[in-house]
Image (cartoon, rainbow, N blue to C red; front, top):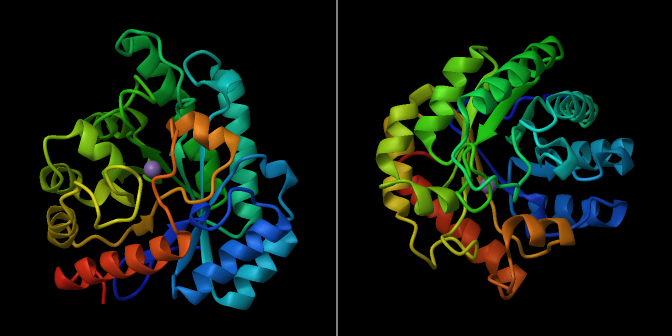
Length: 292
Ligand code: MN
């Protein structure tokens, strides 16, 4: 089984599982994987919530039958917020890496450094950032031993105080200093935190390994305020070969509602999200020569 998301001819194009189902049960995973296969995607992003309950064999055979690959993503549990509980976070991340390998993936990304929603009311202390870098360095080395790359996603100020900007993620990579760590951007968070979309992408260059394509309200891409031409122009200009994942939450569970403050339905008809959102992103990617 090929565990890499990389394609010969350009970036891999996929989507977050929550577009189809809020639970990675047998039934939920079937809905997601069949939906992604029908949409012609390269991969599906599996959120590692309650990953000890995942039927790994079932998921792997579904993926293989459908010719799909997967990435894995997570946010830390509240009790394992990294600066407050570095040992707990390290143990949780080590188990998540095992689950990533078991699912046949070589990519674990997302909020590996924070619980979403834990705020201190203060900017990050230098000591907190040193702790994050120290723990993730150890995690990265153990991940490298089993062929896994890890990503750090910069998210908005209301969800974390630790890492809001691409430039901060870049500084964290300097501090971690391991070759299998990449930056993960998300256009929803960029729309809140960055001055624009093009410059942060180009400034990261090859350090950008994963991007969530998400509209400004987390609804259907193409219907909001994200400057999609600037996003894809930036990806084109850095010759992006990482993964492109549409992220939107048509199906959610309570953990995600709480973590992302999603108090209303921003999607409407999930079939329209899949059809119009994916075709919009494909068209924009092709216009800029990012997707073939
Ligand atoms: Mn995201």
